[in-house]
Length: 213
Image (cartoon, rainbow, N blue to C red; front, side, top):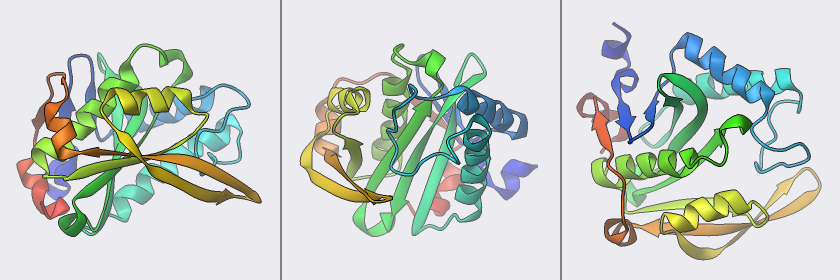
């Protein structure tokens, strides 16, 4: 079975309304279609790296290639775990947990997107909480970091609701434009003292060597 060769396919994070896991082939195709319909309002660009060529087909292809690249490039020292967000079995978007030199620095970062039709229902906060529970409670993370554009008010609100605190700014280039992001950090102590939703994790034990955790 696939899970015997690639244990990450058996890893499932459950929250009260959501299931987070690696998408199967048809689910990935569904996610590409969701992305093609849009994950943010026209004229917005909340991501440092643009999706594809900005067309529906480009966004769909970016979802596919991003997923394949993340899995093919997996290393214990540099990994990206892109999970489908499912509501009652239906994929509505994706979230990812990332680690760089995780065995040493014990820091993770995240990214996420949800189809436009699923915004404003609290799914983004719930999905991020599931990722953070995996990181802090099961992988032994010491901190989580996120960089958020200063005008991305929705993502700012999610981060602050979960207990992230200001940690300076980041300046990055996108083409010939310099973009300023707020750098936010959530420590283990802050995570441990914050109110939390119930989160369960299945299938983790065979995956631990993949994280060197």
